[in-house]
Length: 252
Length: 212
Image (cartoon, rainbow over all chains, first blue to last red; front, top):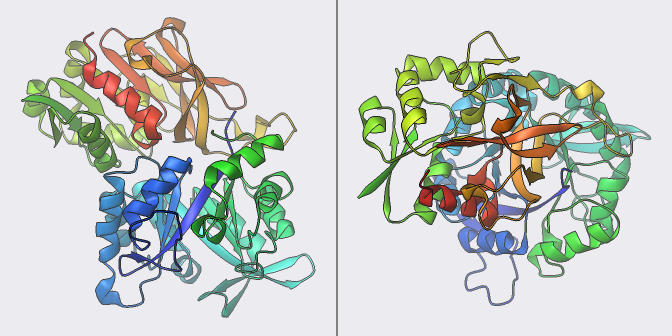
């Protein structure tokens, strides 16, 4: 049967991995190619790059990074950050990305999801949803790193992007992101049950049990994490062995 | 120098396929091309494809490549990937455009409403991620690849060959579906070997050494 996926996420700024990746014997802690290769060796099912480059002058650097990684690492690559137009999607795919994530631009212009999916196929379009709980059992969509409440119900938005042609949803709890307290399982479950497309849970992973819970209780199809892998606390392989021991189907 | 042509009709991530082939076959010249004459001259042919099968067929014809692909499929080592597999069949649920019709059979959509896992949870469509491929029989392209090995899939449609002897591999997602077909000099897969890590590279390496 289909395996649940584990996806390490790397923040890239002007071509360098930031927020420090701390592997033993890594020659260059900021080199996206070397880090991606390391995660591939550990058995990562995909790798996600989030381009957090602020300056528009440096925007094209990510294309060279994607190209370099795709020449050496033969697992799916998702790239998000700063995607505004269908042309941005096309350029990232041509550079070697397999999927492209869009977030703020999709909220501001939902037609972008439909246009991009029509142009390159739904399978390449990931809509990232940043959600915050606003009352019990209710979550709303936020943009700009959780600062701006768009006053859109997150579950409704998930259904809408699925209908527009998104192939996958990357769902981040802004309440949990960076806390290490685990995924917002209520949010994850609500979105995963609401849509027929795969959902990646994100935000809050502090230990391996959190990853397993995202799948078993949150019903996520994939789990994304950054710091627990970057700082060498756990390898992707350890995470998979842990999940398999709990009866979760993984690729080992 | 020996050559392998990757058919470029404007649909899909050709760079990934080209990079993976360059990785496993440094002794080959990898040509990404839309030129029928180049296809005719190449030693091996790879037809990738992403998106919708009818769109791919339309583009393939618009590029004047359909005939060259059919000829190549009749004469030289031929690898179809994803939509490059689906186009070999006659017809797809996805639209009214006919396939190349090299193989008898249809392309079907996963019946998402009717698909559940063992715990009763609905299965997602697209079928996205790493799933097991069960080999129907020994084949040079399976050499060194364990039965039930996982490959990376991303698709909502699958092929349904009219003749079971075409089936080279199958995969469980809801019911079993055909994830690889083979006949004579043709091998075609629904999954993406170029994105399936070491096991995918092994399959591509096997293809590059295949002498059907």
